Length: 408
Image (cartoon, rainbow, N blue to C red; front, side):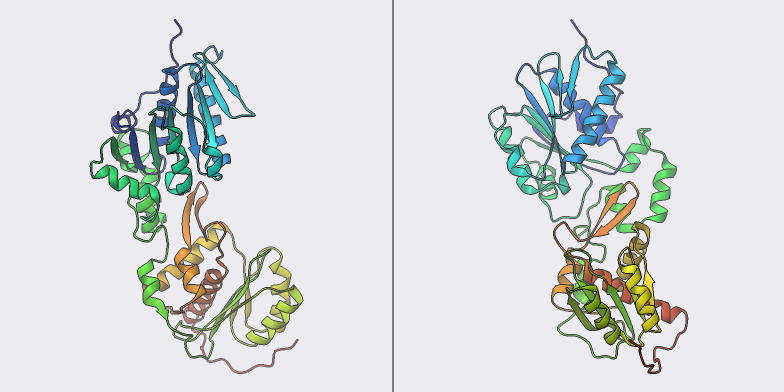
């Protein structure tokens, strides 16, 4: 009889969560705590107990993430069974089959309708807080006739998602459900994560980011870096009185908007406009409206020559190049302004953008952006205006600037 593949031993708290006998196991976990590795071991073990025609699923938020896990499980199997005596892989259809005829499939949740129809004997929903709720419904339907078990894992991401709500039901003792939390310090105790790495992250990341990513503590704001309460405190019914002391401009890209945001000396939005048009129209409009006022303008990519042109025409214009690092710093500055009540915004679309804005942890750092399908042009323009006003204050530049004729 052929023996099953051998895998590393899980650390105690990890093993308790992975081998939970509950039909639905929800694991809220920090980054790099071993949740993925543990569930890969569980999926292989479940598949080993199956037989011909039994299907087991790994479901990730999008297909490319599922492909990463597919390659990872292949490496695990090759290390345990390099001759591939007990398994085979199909790269095109993204499945791995064991000698007993059971198969593990790796799927993306970005098209929930594609997940219906199959009978599944066990599944993992990975990064559940980023998976569409419709996909969770689809996966649950595939387990109906088989009575299959499900592991729901991922980082926490606020409280406004189906995974968080399901975790609360599991914590309350709902039948057939179990809840576990794995933090970065559990991983340190388990020997899979260096303490120095966690302490470094704590020192350099914003507190709300560190607490969600490393302590699995959900924020009240669903991953919003500004805080919904702070946004509400900063909201005014109408634009504030001028004059403008500093502008921020986010230039349109593709189907986005060009947004012009002006702040008065108190950090209140007193001018706010957005439009879509060609570069020639945008150039003329910005020159006319900015005039001699200080402005910080997005100069990333195609915006670079536009900003160079504006710098020649308007004496107080500066460019700002967006990168993952510079955008993080810019948004942290805006978050600080919200928390210290140093900025005020008018009710309407800008408030909507600020409330929907979110952060997401990626291997290179923290990514700040609007959710898929939404815009963050106004948020960027506001953040640029706040930065420009702050720089003027720090450098002791008078906020009253003499009128200068702006040349077209």
